[in-house]
Image 1 (spheres, rainbow, N blue to C red):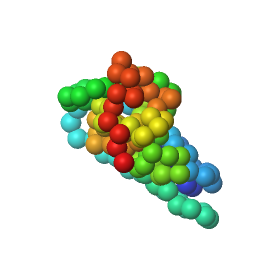
Image 2 (cartoon, rainbow, N blue to C red; image 1 turned 90 degrees about the vertical axis):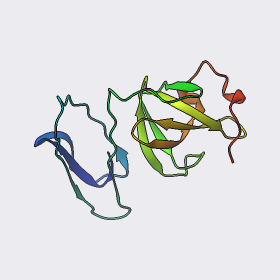
Image 3 (cartoon, helix red, strand yellow; image 1 turned 45 degrees about the vertical axis):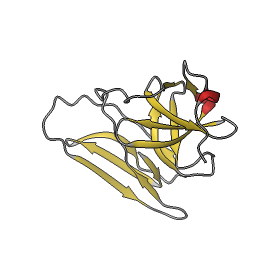
Image 4 (cartoon, one colour; image 1 turned 30 degrees about the horizontal axis):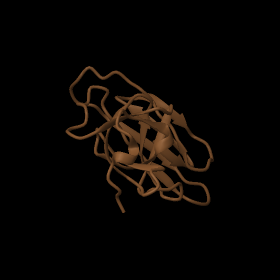
Amino acid sequence: MTVDDGARLFINGHLLIDAWRDQSPTPYTGDIYLPGGPVTAQMEYYENVGGAVAQLNWTSANAPPPSDGPTGYVAAYRLNVRSGPGLYYPAVGLLSRGQEVRLLGRSWSARWVKVEAPGNVRGWVSARYMWSKVPLYDLPVIQ
């Protein structure tokens, strides 16, 4: 989850993430084993002053690999997925090291790559934090 200011995330009644404090937009992640069946998720949030962000995303470790097309892997511990090719675009998702993604295209400079990941995560990531057997300059340029 990404929050500004505080939040707590409970899964099946268990506290998974406790970020109950004033802060600028900050991403948090947590891992939990779920044996199957119904799952309850409860996110508590508060806003103090300034900007407001409360975003929750999740993916399954058992998610199938991306469909056809070239793939890449996340080289950073955590990597923001942005709505556009630049740091000034808002984050729309979060990827983890080693996660496989489908490579959709690149910016004209090849500094940003458009990706698709399990969980309907689709957007732009910095190319410096991606690894692929396909040279990024071989991807189509997306405007």
